[in-house]
Length: 332
Image 1: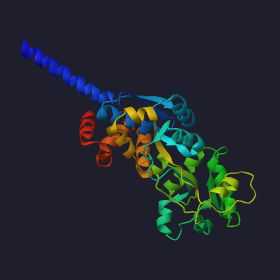
Image 2: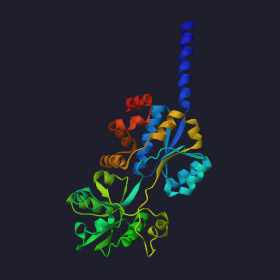
Image 3: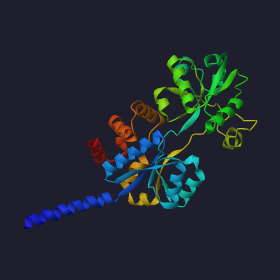
């Protein structure tokens, strides 16, 4: 009886210790934004926090502005894995300064990028083309589908910020004088289709796109350099203003994509969990390829996260403790 009692006490003691360890993290709500890269990153965090660190993690649907605003004002959700902080810098800075938000890893280590791209096979065949100015010297390499005597710069649909900037850069870099037309592709599908069509025919293409995206995981493209340093004041004055008459050449700034957590969660999560969130980062190339796999396989964020963990052990294991890594691998 004493042996049974001792065993029972030991068992409850061990469960108690385990519970105390898990209680460090406890319940955690993770915001999954309504685009593919954010969806898979939220699912990845849920798996790692749940399986590796014993958190009780739940995903909730979010979007950049309401999610980050709620984190500051209400202290929930606990975690925004893919926070596009440059979309609302004043709000994020206020949250950080007031101690209501804590910045963790820059989730996209090389930043979200926008600009003008050309197919890699064109870049490889013409190594002298590195900048927008270089490309505009060769309208014959990037023919307008409707007028082969002209080159074409493909733009996004109306209503996109990137479409406005591309139109302004087209003016700033002298696209019309260089023999190029600015093509309105009409929609996101139209823009994607123009790249796919050119790539499958191994034809020239130049125009606006961004990363991370599934399309760039499928079709390898090279981003053109702008040939000038970034000028933030000029960018704000004219490059982003549709009716500004005198845009100047400028570099397209990268968007900072950072993981944000509430102050409350950072304090209760424990060193191991915050250590993971401070290390976890991946590149555009990694995310592009993962999203391309998800698109081809009609995969959910959870499917994509599991695929990433199974195929990229060398990348993610340094983010976590050895004990967590073994638990995560065992769960797959």
